[in-house]
Length: 347
Image (cartoon, rainbow, N blue to C red):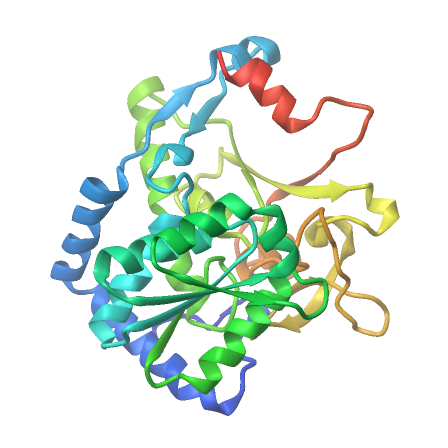
């Protein structure tokens, strides 16, 4: 087994026995594909000519002036479909095609991963079903319409809080039922092995590009690399290229919501998460004393982080240097991130 199933004590494969052969098949197919120059060449070609890579590294003049230091932004929002999610969806869809799986399922919350999955399925002629909580469907109607225009079927999920956590559960149930013909494109660095490794390797193009670009532009590495930490794909994709650079501080930013003391937050690595099994892996999970998963509502619709962010947030368990974690609170006492960006980054 060349793909690590655990990162520290986190990770693993906590799934029904029905899915174990599918995970073994996926792992073997991934190892062969990732070592195949033709697969890598096709992915690189589509990433360049279809997705629009490399994305630019932009010196935010307004924000740099406000903070009194240079701030550079990796503009993943300029890639086709508007986010980094296409990096992973494109690679996994090519892998599914190579495996002969013509039916694709995915989960989505804000809708970006759903749009990315629908986009690559339209490109490759694959069937696409996207599971999405009813509450997220209500909040993200434009992305729902985009998925449907691309030919995907959006399956509403009415269980629980009707957000991302429930959508993932519904997608896993579908996969158990249709495992022979279906590939599940997980959008975050979560889930049972080998998914976290697959997602990390497909997303590390963000960090690899950013590292080369900052060296070309400034002649040195940055003193600090900052990324938001949700499911973990954006953060681990950026951090992967810098994790061996001891002089670079890696900062993961979590959502502090209504305050860490309120319990209504999305910061399991900072204060609220304990090791727990959710959606096929052991990771940092927001849960109560009875080991019930805590809903985080509008603040963050998934109460866990992936195995590598979980381990990096736990100094005793990490086998890499731990990351600095910063909870960010949004309330009436300070400008929102959206206002700050519009005023300082947009010029």
